[in-house]
Length: 90
Picture (cartoon, rainbow, N blue to C red):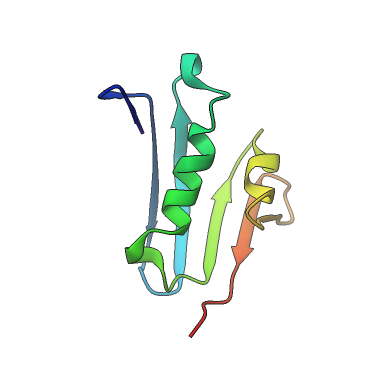
């Protein structure tokens, strides 16, 4: 994420680019939090052209459950792990 040409956050996803991806490192620099940057980063991963066929996303969070829940992620057994299962329109 860039603001005025300076990096203010980042996120990444790793997977097979077919059916599975794990979202990692959704980070926003402290002075830029509360501006919707994390939401934009998550949305950019979920809508990225190389991830358009992914039906299962996983992630681990200690404190951002509400952020991910807004996109359909649900907690898995241990409480920190979350999962999104989505249907891809044909």
